[in-house]
Image (cartoon, rainbow over all chains, first blue to last red; front, side):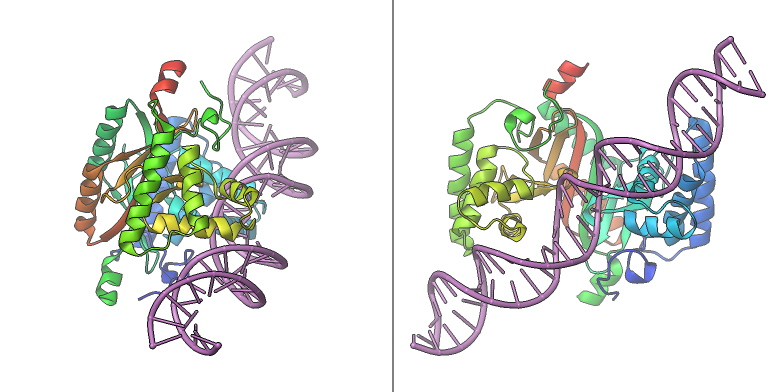
Amino acid sequence: MAGPEGRGTPAAGGAVAFAAHDHAHCTGEGMARAEALSAASGARLTPVRRRTLEILLQSHCALGAYEVLERLAAEGFGNQPPVAYRALDFLVEQGLAHRIRRLNAFAACMHPGEAHSPVFFICRACNAVAEAPAEAVRRATEAAARGIGFTVERTTVEALGLCPACAEAGA
Amino acid sequence: MAGPEGRGTPAAGGAVAFAAHDHAHCTGEGMARAEALSAASGARLTPVRRRTLEILLQSHCALGAYEVLERLAAEGFGNQPPVAYRALDFLVEQGLAHRIRRLNAFAACMHPGEAHSPVFFICRACNAVAEAPAEAVRRATEAAARGIGFTVERTTVEALGLCPACAEAGA
DNA sequence: GTCATGTATGTAATATCATAACATGTCAAG
DNA sequence: CTTGACATGTTATGATATTACATACATGAC
């Protein structure tokens, strides 16, 4: 069982998916999709923004803004917080990344482009994060909203609990 | 339409429910229920904790920890952050209050004692907050979790959008 | 081309939110 | 009346996020 060291390295438990898979593939495909989507929408995927997304995809973790900043700065980009926050905000706005509030962190979107209402499953033991599409959750939320006359624009759904590995190990 | 002044006063838009209702009644009933629940569970609802809950209930808003602290300090309690955070953490733990992460704020629970998975509707125009029970959302989330072997313990559901009043005014 | 405009980036300074660590106080069980 | 568990107070610091302003770069009008 991985310790509670927090985010930042897959080894520390910040991995964005529980099952084993090909990270390089995710990164390549993710970037390609981002390029295509940006081209289509007219959004400007500039070097900092592109690199920021790449960092999120490569790390395959939820990363804090300052962790992203550190990596950007090491590559010659600005080293003040707004540099990271602006790039991350752009990515979130474009649906290429998500903000995970419980962790004060950001993760690359696993299903960019598709209209999706992601649910995040966060393991409290190892901090791993998985993103799952959950249309049913969105529908249920909107049904509740209608009851009080509220118009839903975005929803944040974060579930805390135990990932399969930690549930096994802990119990 | 109220301005985006943030939390802290119902006038500023932090009200926890959209519909008009009797605040004094909420406060009284909320405190009574909290007393009863604490007595039943053996939790110690000490003066700071009691007063903290009362502040949340009376303000009828989502309040930041430092806003709560300010009010506590004005009444002779400690005036350092841990005083507020400890009391708030206790209330959240006991299910008497909720943390609203999008606002970095806390609000008294509107349905304490009942097993409930609350959904928060946050108006992006006036910051008002409404808490609604949404069992269907919890069920949908758990269904998605089962698909990947995740064990859900707590869920946070926050919907951003427009409250009835702002939707009317804005459109 | 070059100029005006909007957008993006870089930087400094600061605001806001949250916790660690330790000392002191309170209360009930033994 | 002592001990142990919990609660509170305080200091200090850490982590997260934003404001404000200066500079640079792209794009389209002319």
